[in-house]
Each structure stands twice: as C-alpha cells, then as structure tokens.
Length: 501
Image 1 (cartoon, rainbow, N blue to C red):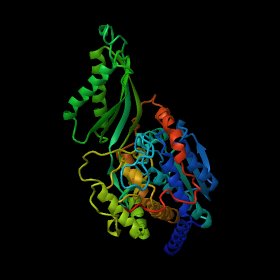
Image 2 (image 1 turned 180 degrees about the vertical axis):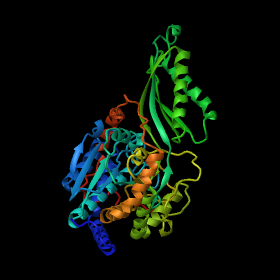
Image 3 (image 1 turned 30 degrees about the vertical axis):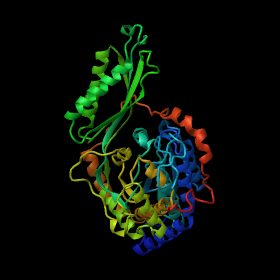
Image 4 (image 1 turned 90 degrees about the vertical axis):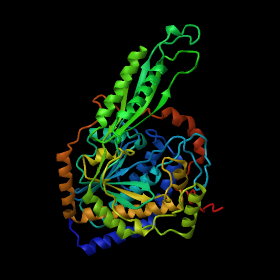
C-alpha cells in the first residue's frame, strides 16, 4: 500500500477529515453529555467505559476489556495494511466526588446533594478521544494507509491509578506516538516536563476496643495513631522542599465516641518532582511508623499508585501545534461569549470571556518547577512518545475540581471545543500516518529521554489495582442519579439554550 503522501494530498486528507468531523460532531457531543450525566467515580466507570467501548466496537474497532486487571479499562484497536506506525490515543472518563451540579447554571445548584460531577472535563475528553480514533480509522481505510490506531480507555485518572498498572502489563508497548488531551480554558499543546510525581497510599492502624469512659486504659486507639501521624507530617512539612505537596483525608476514624476505635485509616497523596518524591514518601512512612510505636498500634500500608512526572515530547507537540493553528479556535457565538462573561461576573472571576485566536501557542516547561497537580499520563510519557493537547472546554479563569467546571462541561462551549480538539488531534495523526519522516525527530527525542530516564515503576511488586475504590460511595448515589441520565442517542443536548438572566 502507498504510504508517503505529498503535502497537497495530506491537505486534502485533512480537509476531508474536517468535513467528516463537522458532519458527525453531534454524535460525540451526545456521548460527552451522556458521560457527564453518568458522573462515575474513579474505578467505578462501568457505564462510561462501556458506552465508549460499545461505540468504538460499532465503528469496527476490536475491543479488549478488563485490561490489566481493571474491569473499566479497555483497548480499542483498528489496523490497516502493515499496521505500522501505531498511533495511541488516551481516553479518560471518571468524575470527582461531591461536585454534582446543574449544567449551564450560573450559580451552585446541585442535581443531587453529595453526588459526583465532572469537575475536570473528563466527559469531553473521553468523547474527544473516541471522535479522534474514529476519524483516524476512517482516514486509514479511505486512503489505504498503513497503520494502527489504538484507543486506551484509562479509568481512575482522578485517583491516578490505571496507567502504572497498564504500563506494568505492557499495554503501551510498541507505540510510535501517543495523543493525549485535556479540557482547559486554552487551546494549545503541552511540551516538556510538567505535573508532579506522586504516591497515593492508605495507612491503616489497628488497636484495641474498650469502653471510652468506663475503662479507656484497656483500649488502644487507632484514631489517635492517625491523629499522631498527621501531626508528625504537619511538623515535617517545614522541612520538605518547596516543590512538595502533601495532603490527606481520613476515610475511617471509628464508629462511635463511646468506643475506643480499634481501626482507623488515613489516605495520603505525596507529590514532588521525580528527583525528590521517593524520599518524601519514605519520610511520611516514618511518621506512620512513629505513630504506631507511640500508641501501641500495628499498621499496614497499601499503595494505590505511584506515578512519575509528565515528559511531553516536544517534536510531537510541535506537530500538534501546527494542527491547532490550521484548525483555529472554535467560532464562539454571541451567546457563548455573553454567557461566559455572565458566569465569570456571577462567580467573582475576571470577565475575560473565552479564549481568542491570539492564545494558540505551544506551552513549554516552566523554568523552575514549583509543584503542581499530577496526572498518570506521566507513566505513558516514559514508555512511548506522548504529547497532550489542552482544549477550551471552559471560559477563562473557571475553577477546576469545582462545581463551576461541572456546570460548563456540558454546554455548547464544551461541544465546540470537542470538535476543534478532535480536528487538531486527527490532523496530527494524519501527519504521522502520511509522512513517516515526521516520526524521526519524535523517536530521536524519545530515545534521549529513555537514556536519561529509563523507566522504573514506583509501584511495589505486590501492588494490585484498587478496583474496590469508591464502590460503596458510587453505589450510595447511583439510584438517585439514574433519573438524570442522558441517552447518547438523545435528540437534544443537555443545555439547549443558555440562562442569560
């Protein structure tokens, strides 16, 4: 089969892909809205992952479900000709706890108090990934190109769980390039080093029950051990480098004040640069050991995940940037802009509206890393050349991991961003499939990264995916959420018109 295409042929193939995107975009807007309505917590995304896998299967992809021991992980594969090069696409679809919100509402208005919500735009991201995969498969077949498209359904990103286990099982082996995406308030690819490395782990202390008033001297309080560990970690903070971030919640602290709790647990995230995160982790574990000794408890540590920083491939990001420039910003309507500014005003944000064409620049590594959030995409960047595209699901200044993002990620603004992102990612894939020479600098850069940072997993050898994570929390709200579910074949979007008053 002919592989190398001239520039004019590539332009024609891209133009055809953009027409296809315009003609089919409603399908993926509805997929995004459906996933938004499901709002499933990490590792419990049965409807969301099932919807994406079933759609891709209907589009002719081969589906492998239950990847790396995780029921909501899958790989969708379509191949043509020799099957090389192999282009990977990452998809996420999990939501965040306690962020339930009415779509397109200017103020906080939960659909269901305490229920989850898509506060990180993963509904739009999963739909964008599926959109891109289908468009690239179509280009492979119509143009008789050699290549393979693989979409990786990656659950639990908000808990940073799935990709370390997928890497350990070799799921990402043999990829020539990986296309990632993330909703934002800007439209540009990310290159270089970003995000924090991280360990996520639970420390469970075991003590002895007793009557808290009658004979507390016979008890050993597991809750006191948790409190003592947290106090020790707070004393430690001053002596961690300024790039570190350490935070926790207490999932279990006892059941009744009049019973000395014999079991209590604390869930920690420890974040830092790859250079320092392992040592930070060891220091926090010593705080747990000290708390156990001081209180007379025993303790166990379960590591959920350990992830690296992100190392975005600049050569691949440059190709993404070319395609962002070719696609251009979504064409915002007057209503889009007006609604964005009203939302910003109502919530005390700067009234910057929506990103304009002037914002399409390539994002580089920060000169000095000062600490940040995390993404388990970092694991993939160390085993295959990877670049991420940020796309404008949100108006400027909107808060992430917040009901504001939930409100906005199922609006016409988000839908237009999905289409623009899918066009840019599809164009990037077409460049790689039509001109193998474009892979050369990508591979060379990745080879240098591998030499400098050969991959070594942070997972303990006995670590297993926490597939039980959030099971009870999700089960507690599913029946209340079901009346609000949106069918992916619905004729109407969740937000048909804006509330402009």
